Image 1 (tube, rainbow, N blue to C red):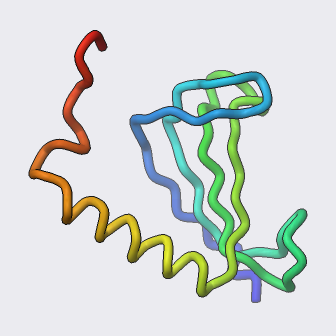
Image 2 (image 1 turned 135 degrees about the vertical axis):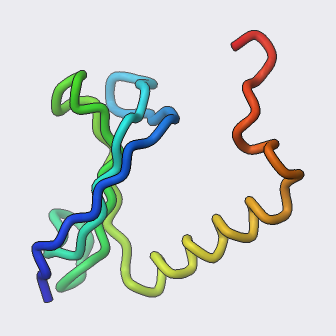
Length: 93
């Protein structure tokens, strides 16, 4: 069912869209009818940089099971990395 509730979070990262890489500054997460995935409802995540316009967006539509598996995989990957490694600035940046 569509809740029309959207959670947004400010981010620091990068995404790759049709025009190449861009800075990602925000994510919107919501449950709604998908635009492409063949399911009745999906968890949708839009990674975007609103300052760059609508082309600076990467969207995903996930089943509930896939979304929960992704959350678990993210938690596992971060917990297996040394503290602070995932947020450390790479050499030359």
